[in-house]
Length: 214
Image (cartoon, rainbow, N blue to C red; front, top):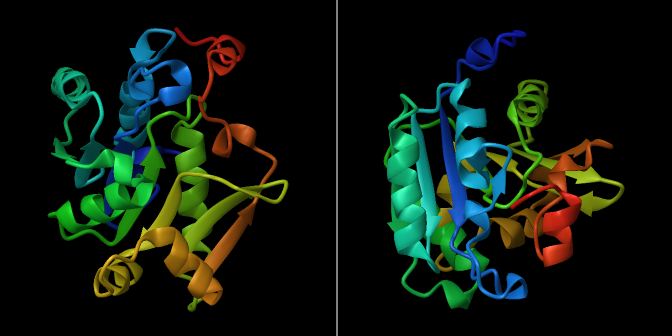
């Protein structure tokens, strides 16, 4: 990997982006968090646009609750970005986020080297946060295949995974990323940072106000 201040040159490795947008938003009274707006765009649009500078060879969004609304937003976003965006619908999103992760990993079609697994409700994740994770991967030792941001002891997102690890996860029926990481801590490079963008997400109406969303 060769790094540069220009995000389009940050990585020569082929990057896939997997975005989880299947949640119910029950604590918001039932609202698709991915469609909350910050400034001029939805959180989903901002996240996808933030990743575009790294020339992802595939961007896949997992939908579930509010799939029609979110898939319509994806179609709108596609008109303004060059990289292809696809989606896959989780037929049973109430079964938990791990099912969306698994479905998304199984549905990736590209010959990627790295996959960035991101949540659609983190309003402060942008180009610099993604670049920092890629830089951490470029500096990883041979045994590390995962980059996990940690802020004051709290796990954050997005998380980077090598293709090799994803293939191992998919070989185990029902396995998802977090339990695999717990079972194989030697594969995880912890990125200790004070950037709380990695742990900020939207759960309540108070969060919407505090984060300046609408």
